[in-house]
Length: 444
Image 1 (cartoon, one colour):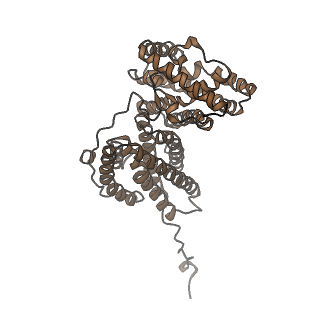
Image 2 (cartoon, one colour; image 1 turned 90 degrees about the horizontal axis):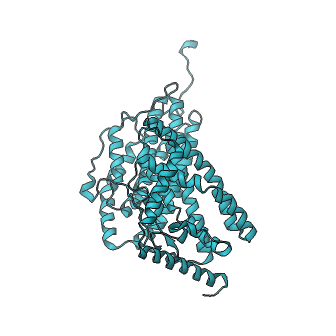
Image 3 (cartoon, one colour; image 1 turned 90 degrees about the vertical axis):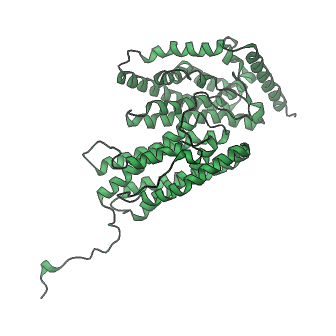
């Protein structure tokens, strides 16, 4: 007769494949990979020339930063009460992953992003989901499903921009990029198979130099798409603030052009991620990524308005003035420069929201209203993180002190303008006005 102690209920459900330690180890690996994905996109932003590729990087790195934050939080939940996350035992993996940012040019990096790196991360996420237990590990399933959705959209939109980027760049640039992709693809394909294993085992070798790569250096002067009307100063009041922004019709145009030129602020937020993330509180990555994304939305506000009005890229003045002002600064001063612009001109946002509404331009008013909401958040970011990094470095400066330092750098840039710069700015200004008058009365 069978004894009760000899009985047991069946345990054939395949959902019990990943233990808590297994899951924590794999998700920790995903966190570090996503974190590096955020950083490499931010770091390449200032040096990316192709406009539509440049516009996508801040949005996608912000989405990736959310995935990174949620993965980190999930790992801490699984490993509670442990509160520290270190890269061990995946140091070699992360060293290899970081080498993928050493692309030979921006096209090579952009192509690798959408045809190799993000697809590999998507495959790893999906492989985990295929093994995951919806019941026990439901929070992780939710995080990775959203991550897969984000990556699908990023790959689709990024690939579309990539097609235009290949047409924009010449054959020599395309050939260099192609060589890089040929070397990278088999290495990353192998990695994608290993990432969901608790122990990685043997990693593939990759020498960036063998495929045209070079040690990454962030661009300290903003690189610009040559299809625009490139000038050192995009509008007269950037060169001579005493001229003022103008009123009515001119203010509409001026604000659209200034919004387009907020590309510099997205780049500066990216540079701050490059300069300051290592050793910083993990929340800095999240805040700086959001700051970067917000600024690219402001840029796209102006770009979209100008396109809707009928402007071509060649009719839009584009500069790198404000980003270049921080080229020779220390890292904290670069953060101070973006904080200076945010806090100094924040009052114009609500004023112009009202002005454009009264002028009958509901779209410009709408854009300024959301711009204003963002800038209030950014003023908080600036104050918080300047205090944090100053205290960390035992630096006695205060956030308010950066106003004078930033103004000095801006004025030095303005003082460096020669007659040819003044003339180029005036020509760009007149070109915008002339074209806008044609569009306003419906003529060509």
